[in-house]
Image (cartoon, rainbow, N blue to C red; front, side, top):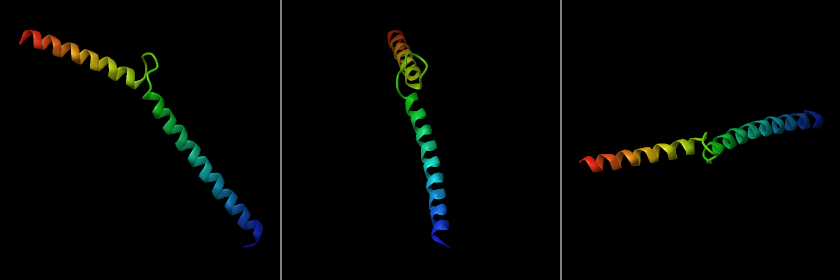
Length: 65
């Protein structure tokens, strides 16, 4: 292989690697966005609402029993 072939091979490998890295970065970023409260539609907000409801149920059960 000549130098031009090696250069093309290295450029192709770097291009594929950077594309995979950017895709992985996008996926991780979108998952992390779900863990931040945003006013009602994130997973964190849903878990907080469920936690509050479970606490209210515990209080009701404690008062009855």
